[in-house]
Length: 226
Image 1 (cartoon, one colour):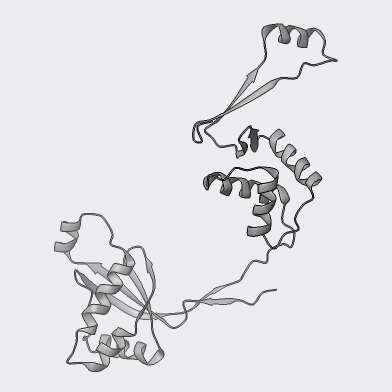
Image 2 (cartoon, one colour; image 1 turned 90 degrees about the vertical axis):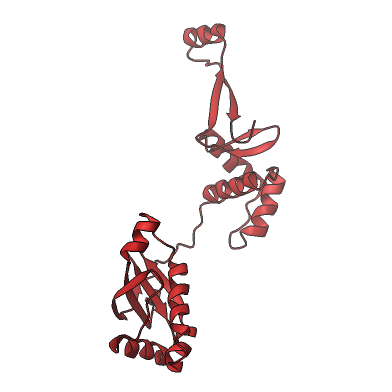
C-alpha cells in the first residue's frame, strides 16, 4: 500500500475580503488566485523600511486559492514566521483592493493514494489512441495505430495483428469507433448512423427470419466532415 502523501505542508492561509469600492467596480467576478498572490507579495516586498518582511515576501510561493477569498502561501519556515509576526503587529499589508480578515497556519491535508491495477484494458487504450490521433488529424490505420501505441503507451504489451483486428471489430460492433475509407474514427454524439435497407429487403427479412438480410450502416460525423 502506498504511503500517505502530505499536501500543502508548511503553509499559511490568508482569509481575504474585497473592499466595497473594489467589489462594486469589478461586479461579481472573482479575481484569479495568482493575481491576488502577486499583489500580496508585491505589497509586502515594497516595505523597504522593514527589510525582514520585504525579504520574506520575496520568498513566498503560491500554494493555492480557495473560492470565497482564501489564499494559501508557502515559504521557508523562517519566512513564514516573519509573516506571522507581521500579522500580530498589524504590519502585514493586504493585496490591493482587499482586506485581510484572518491569517493562520494550515495543517497538511493527508492524501491516501489509490493503487492502480496492472491490467490495462486494450479496448480502452485503443479508444484513447484513436481519439488522440483523430484530434491530431493523423490517419488511423492498423499500422499507424500500432506505431502510436508503441510510442505513447510504452507500459502496455503491444497486441498482435489478430488481436488488434478482433478488438477493433468488437469496438465497431459496440459503436464506439467506426471505419471508413479514411481510417478509424471515434463515435461521438455528433456521429449519425444511417441504415441503408430497401423496402424489398425488409419484406424478405420479415418473410424469412432464418436467413436475415444484412444491413448496410453508413456513418456521418459532423465534426470531421465525413
